[in-house]
Length: 415
Image (cartoon, rainbow, N blue to C red; front, side, top):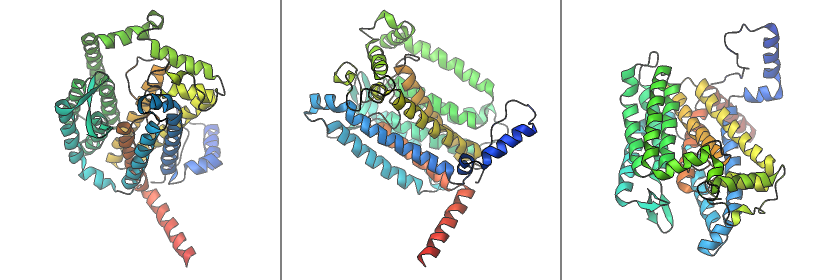
């Protein structure tokens, strides 16, 4: 659907002639014309995704070399695996982008069934890594993390179910049943694996979908209160979670213990300065910074590429968020609106939690930086979800017309 980009209004203030003039000038500017193009959302999502993916591959190569040599005897083993994940993920993205909206709606229950099967299976035959039983061995060194696939399944299924509900006046019954109980059961299964970070992400995805569905704010207040109470109980039940909270509240209390990772990450960011020490020249990745190529890859970016590099990452995430939520806001298809809100909440909130933990603004929860951190179980489902959004963007009425005009023009040139 072709929609114009307008400067948002604040509150209920009357729009003056000056405001209209500014908006018209912006719409007629080069940036405004690009944003008003029917395929602008499609290209923004694709461009930001590919740039983040490319940057992630480069930084995984740099951040993982020492760890890769120590474990496998080769500096390139981990980055080769990440490149394999990236190629497979891009292929899945392209295939997903060529599908129709009806494909995702018709397979929503299939995705949900697969997700629950994997979540139950991991409790039976799963392997424990770093105190969490949330991995299934596939073959050789490759493992699957079902909780990552569960995020994608919850988005597709939740968007399908809620798009069939009464969208004008959401009620307690048509929101609570069956979306919230099913999502709650999914969170419980992930918690049983010991994966607190992805439990929070499932809750964030659920809230994003419900918000896009027009759920009254009093429901969010109820969910928020219940969620805070549940987090408090879970923190008391696990000593290591309490240590993370206390370390976050008082970083100086245990800098050589639970606060070591955050401290070293902040050292890395401070060392980088504006321009960084140079690609590949990080000192923290030599063993001082744990998980340098996974959860704490952002400090390595800051150390090697400096403030410019971290700002570039934040800018790309901001562009991706803008494009996804723009698709959600402008789409006339309820499923697209809800699915885009779910994917946007997933990527944005996970990036905020990861970067916030690195900066010491949030407790460490162990979630990777989307599209950048090492890990196929996180990368591939994220790329599939983005491919689904690309399919939705391509199927907007304005985009379909633009694609038909382009195909017609290409056919005439070939003649």
